Length: 430
Length: 59
Image 1 (cartoon, rainbow over the protein chains, first blue to last red):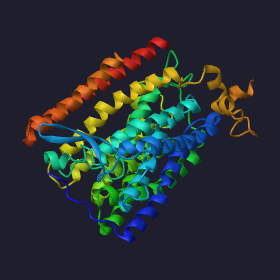
Image 2 (cartoon, rainbow over the protein chains, first blue to last red; image 1 turned 30 degrees about the vertical axis):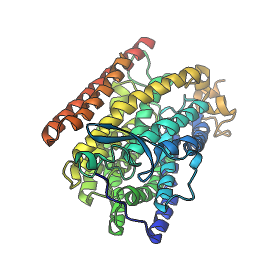
Image 3 (cartoon, rainbow over the protein chains, first blue to last red; image 1 turned 120 degrees about the vertical axis):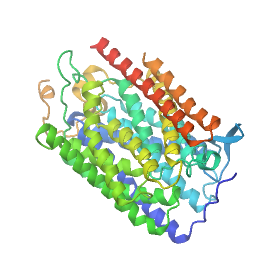
Image 4 (cartoon, rainbow over the protein chains, first blue to last red; image 1 turned 45 degrees about the vertical axis):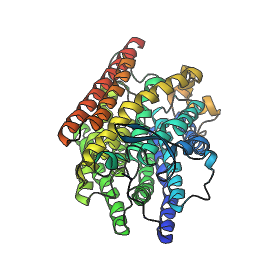
């Protein structure tokens, strides 16, 4: 059985999707600002420079290698036969973006979408490893993700791979659905964050021998919160473009996609605000920022499919869960994640993927979503951890203790992000 | 211990994949897939436990 042919893209839809994809990098800028704002001032310039470097490395490596492994739904792929079904597991596109100009308009836009996706995926673990992960290590992590891990997942989910074919081959709904990259980008990025944090270890003094974890608040709540607003613009465009490209949403569904994205983020913010207000007596700006982002992430999988009330519910659960997950990871599981990326991206992404299965009208869709989650959790996390472990032996992730005390700005760049101010006590004592 | 947990996780995935191949009815498929996810969750919790023990030793 072959999948239903994708309708050709009209010129007006091509232009609209291209315009949306040109707005989508604002989501990357927003995440970069949130990461920087939630880190301490001594590493701010290195953090933001790292964001730029990682986007650059991810784009170059994906162009050279990753895009070939990702392939596209109409292109060739490596597959094997099992139980009478074809399991397409790896793309077989041209190297170095060969044939880009001769590709169909739809495939050209899909490639642009994947470029943005790989950049965001690679950026997520950088925020978790903030203040101890070296620039070279961050870029190497980005290279590995862009060359191997992201392309494999993107092919399975977007490029005609076996997860996309679950509906055709096994009658599970319309196959695994992930319009805006909740799984491909955020779950993958969140799991990479967990691997990075495990390998790099916590920041110096974060978990003392006795007592609770030390609070290390971010240095610029304004940057983090402005990043959230910037991310909203990018995310709405991102989800609309994803709905056109991967869900083949009609024009009538596009405004609803943007509205659902906004509703999910809004409800998540209100929920995170309420949880922190109840738990700590006052709302916590950094956790509210994380709640907002978690709402955006959770909306990514199905903003183009679900109804506005469902989007509110998706945001509510994401906003309630995020503060609790952040606290669980830090206090109970000894995971030092300055940007909260594991809770926001892995937690929010997983919930978003499940929510599509719960709210989609097709029979068997929930099962398709669960199989996709099983594939990402069961295969991606162990593979990512082992790859990063080997990489850490070649190119150590963490900076030495003295470098961490000085801050990554002075240690790696030789200059502070805020040179006119003495902004942390231990530096002033030198 | 961390590696044992991480090695258990692909076993959960293969359970899910086996569910697709072995069963055609939705109910047994769903049960098998949920069992696969449970194996993955157990593997993840063992890996997390291993990480916490490593951290405790290093303090």
